[in-house]
Length: 261
Length: 249
Ligand SMILES: Nc1ncnc2c1ncn2[C@@H]1O[C@H](COP(=O)(O)OP(=O)(O)OP(=O)(O)O)[C@@H](O)[C@H]1O
Ligand SMILES: [Mg+2]
Image (cartoon, rainbow over all chains, first blue to last red):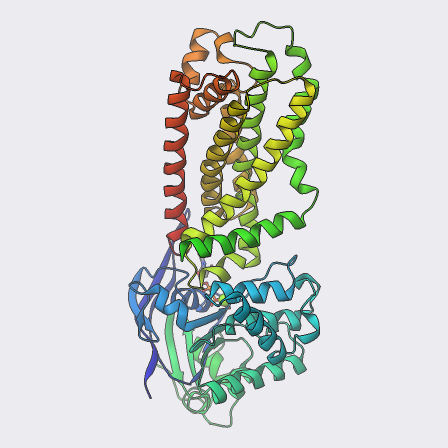
């Protein structure tokens, strides 16, 4: 399978008044076309910062990466055309209607007025926003808002979709719907999905492969069952145990393979 | 592309402003109060300018309107940033310059609308000035608005909170207002104050608009005013563009 994202030594240091913050220290990763990649890590591990670099929002202070064959720094416009991004905290104006946000987004992706209107209708139908088009976005429920955020990111049918904690705050039903949506995008359109989550059951159920980061570096990667086998002792263990063992937040379970002392 | 993108961002921003209704008129309130309650005090005073006291005061009030209106424009982008709207737009291929220009032109439009209201009120109060001069005055309002709104958005994009933004902007606005002779001409000032006022770019615009309102379009004041206003606008848009281009700002 061809690599659609590849990063080598990707790093970002923030300069702050209190000195440098090494948010991402050097990430190497490869994501294949059509893969659903779960990007895990504790709070502050550098997940959002990595996503912001891969979507050209933030210039790396070290390393390189390409997305859909376009180099982050030398061809940011190419990267932007290829990817959609749903930020951790969304990105719509509360005073604007769902319809206007969707149409404007289409026009920002260079659709004509008529195309943008048609695409807004399509997206609303696809994401169950049909009856809500004339509502101000502030008047949507959390789950509806999240679906709108995702609809916005899908406007241009991106090859790669970045989702930063897409299901945080959603009820179980909405989460299941979102999982279905992600699978459908991959199965029907071959979309590569790069998502972060703190729900390990979600990562387990949805992701083909997991990359775990901590303190700004990749500390483990593999399929969910491989990680469980390697870090929690057996493929039947919970991903939670593997995660805690990997990030060292709690002592590894007694039956796990001993780590270096 | 740049033109289309700018028109798109401009349209969105203008609709946001129109939706806010009465807020469209807030900016013109302060200059109107000065016009009604301060203007009449000046009618008998020797201000040293050509023409009536209204021809001295109204140019100052117009630029005051633009000064405060445009300097605080960047406030809105702090809120948009917090909502994630700015980043959402920045991941699309839209031109970075358009994200700035669309907003700046929206503010310029709103300020010109308010400037027209102000001049209409001033005409009712007794202002008499040549039409050409009044139009030149609007030109300066537009240039100042473009310049200051660009800088304001650049600042708004850089700071993290409104609490950092407001003191900085006030720190610029108040001295600019006092040192440029906005309310009363600097010709009334003692020599040291008059000398000091020359370091404030706004001073040159005020002098030029006062000349325009008196019908003298070819004075040295006018030439200097045009040069300073255009130069300042070019510089400010350049700075603004830099900040908007820089990833992660
Ligand atoms: N603009 C910034 N300036 C300074 N430090 C920052 C900035 N953005 C992020 N950081 C720091 O970088 C580190 C990584 O942050 P990041 O948001 O990438 O973490 P995360 O893995 O997404 O965490 P979470 O799971 O809580 O969302 C944190 O220590 C954070 O405080
Ligand atoms: Mg995060």
